[in-house]
Image 1 (cartoon, rainbow, N blue to C red):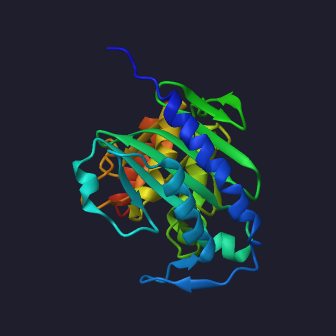
Image 2 (image 1 turned 30 degrees about the vertical axis):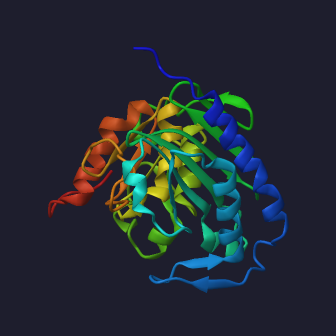
Length: 271
């Protein structure tokens, strides 16, 4: 069976990412007024403005829509093609002026994120790709890390999770842990081989991870839930327990690491 072409979808994603640039030009990271949603997650006028732009650029008749900043219309469950977007992933970093935030766009087909685009306006990095076309990083072909040993790997951790002490069990591990904001941006960096892996042991929404997951898999890497299953999107309750992603040769070691972290034995030591 031939792989379908996503040329038109990728063009739409690129156009949507380009259309967000004038929105970001209206705001200064670090000098942003934020409101706080239930659960203490910040939201800014930029989040809302970006959501409007993305919806106008991406959505066509017959397609579904799931966005962090839009009311969830469950008619999406009847659609085979759905856009899953986070207009501004890493809002905390955006508010703080830390250059680790991004626009995250995923195109989901029959429950799988098959194409995606991520744009970090602070660093002017663009990651875009599909299962059929691979991934480009700032217009040049990229691939996931070919690292074969976990002990030599650089693993990106959530800055928030690190601050909460959720990565203390990995302090003595042989790999390098690098805290960073925005799960979507971390996944994008992994897709381009700029880091070896990332994972989170805390629940995430589909819009946090769908685009990054599409990119990592398109770049030849692997993505799995904490149950070691494929990521399924456009679910009625769009939340997963956690996610792990990385270069293809690290899958077995990372899977074992996650399993041990979830079920530690009294004498176990993570290395």
